[in-house]
Amino acid sequence: MTEPIAIAVDGLSKRFGDVTALDNFSIAVPKGSIFGVLGTNGAGKTTAFKCMLGLARSDSGTTLFEGSQLTPALFERMTYVHERPALYLDPRVSDHLEWTRRTYARYDAPRAAKLLDLFGLAPKKRVKTLSKGQQSALALTLAFVTRPDILILDEPASGLDPVNQRNVLDLLIGEAAGGATIVFSSHAIGQVERAADRVAILHRGKKMLDGEVDVLKADEKVVEATFENDVPSVNGLAADPSVRRIVRAGRLLRAFVRGNSDNVARHIATLEPKSLRVLDQNLEDIFLNAVAASDGDAAAAATDLEA
Amino acid sequence: MYYMEFLFVRKVLYWLGGLLVAAIAIVSWALASSGHALSPHPHAAVPLSALMAGATFVAAIIAMIFGCALARQNNGHLPLVWTRPVSRERFALSITLVHLVGIATAFAMTLAAIFAVFAIFGWLDAITATGDVPVNSSTITHMVLFPLSWYGLVLAITASMRSGAGFMPFGAWILGSLLVGLDASHLFSGASGIVINVLDHVNPLYYFSGHFDDSGRNQSMVSNVGTAIAGLAGIAVVGYAAALAQWRRLEA
Image (cartoon, rainbow over all chains, first blue to last red; front, side, top):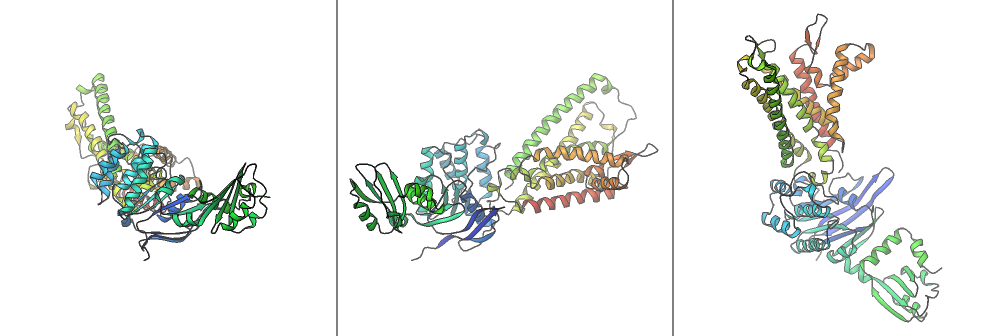
């Protein structure tokens, strides 16, 4: 059975002068899923979110939330956390909560108290006296306190200490388990890998790939070999269409492969390595492959690929 | 929706209250020291309209501070403000209502402070609502519209700004004073004089200022209070509409 789509983004593009910040960006986020958006700095993640939410005007493309165009009323059930907390500096933590209480019918006071406790935020403190991490925590508190159905979070764990980063991931997973749909971006691939069940990789405004994390990982293998001495010449391996990248580091050879890795493993075995194994790629490998492919990175690949 | 703006307005009014208390103390001390306090002129008459005009000027300064409200939102808060379950127009209108209450309160506080000084020295009987400029509906409308026109003007000037808007009220007031001075002086003739006169028509001070004519009489810049009301109302309404039109099209 097909899962209902909570967020359908179709062909969003945004240019700033001569720079294409977002190029034909499309994703479909199933209801109740956690969708991670990965990308380097300037990849277009924030622009994508802003275009989705009408905070920036896209040059083309549409975004539908549960099949409908965005309206202000929808924000009663949806929340957005900007990469830099957009809080007012002079008011207190409690003032922000009061503002949220007055604005949202779904405000959950007991939850507010729990979140303040979780993040260690003092209600009487003025926002300007909070650290960057505490300000991020307050922004997240304001987001979660209305029990939204859809959360769009731009670098939600940025600036947080490891304990609160873990708390945020746990909150995301808990919300999704309760039926909420979450889209979040992060530089921290480990966070995305832990929380997201789907992922899209953006690079230079373009979506390089997207899909379920497990499927992507299952489809991407790394053939890893170690040699007694430096890695010998691996002529011909780069010509194999399944090979995305080859990395050589001293006695270690790694070939990143999409699809069936048997041929590549057999090829490397002929070089008589000391050890040879085929592993699932992790999300970091997949991300780096996608970025390298986008750059046509003969450089990263070419330094690594056998001449 | 307007809660954060309410906090800001309240803070500004607290400051104003403090300044007014300090002003009452200083003026009272100065008057008492000079000996004037104990010997008022037996036939002195102080027009209420003049006292109201003083309060209106203070309210106008407060209105100009409030007029930077959209620029304050632009300075990093739009992702928070524009993802609330209300439209941009409704948000802007809601904070404007708070500002209107704030401006009215500033007017009332200033007038009360002036009355307090008069009460301290027993001069309240000298205040009269009649005279050259009697207090009537036209006078009151004129005075109400003066701060509102500044509010609309500053809002329009700053609606697209992201930083530096705080200097605008000061700059606008200086420029307005300069314009009305140049216009009244008739130093410029021909095209430059026309340009100054046209610009002065979008200057709230123009509709609230006087100048001395050839016979030395103080004359209003505009022919009658009706014209002044129309001019101030026009600046307030057009300025507000222009501000909204700009702001709703911004990008966060």
